[in-house]
Image 1 (spheres, rainbow, N blue to C red):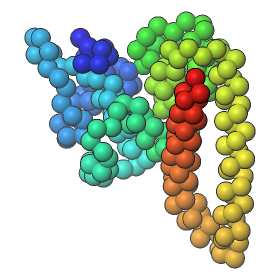
Image 2 (image 1 turned 45 degrees about the vertical axis):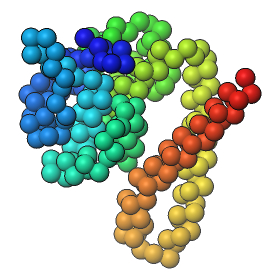
Image 3 (image 1 turned 135 degrees about the vertical axis):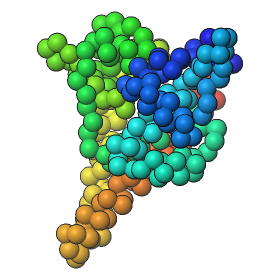
Length: 231
């Protein structure tokens, strides 16, 4: 079954497998109103969209941050109701950006199950180039937060070399921005005690990440608009 936009839908088992949780967890979140109900198809089978998958990943991330279900419900209610799967994935990336690194070691079968598709050697190389995963001797170390975005990028018609060049450019500019912002904040709290510095860091990091993401998105849209106008 597919959605109105032609995207394939997921059964509850497929949704749970892609998200790396149990079917019981999916149904528990649904019973609490954290996940919208699925569309009902033939034989009364529930079908879930990519938005469900992205929202489930966001809920899991918020739980990893230590938020209670009540706090997660309030957080989700504050989000615009029409967010796409891509928007939800970006929001999750912002939330995860100030959390400790969460990397899991999985087999290739588990990796493909979570990706929702077979992964050839070229796919694995592209995901590794995007720092989504790293090979070990007989398994893969994968960032579950980046995996859905990485899998979406596999279908983007961009050469492997271009991905590596883009990653290098992003890292260089991100480090330069982080260095300059760190210097500014260091100067701003130079006369304060260490506890005040830690408090400022805890409050500013998510705000800075959100600001950088928003600024980058707007800049990218402007660049693409100019590029398309010239073509």
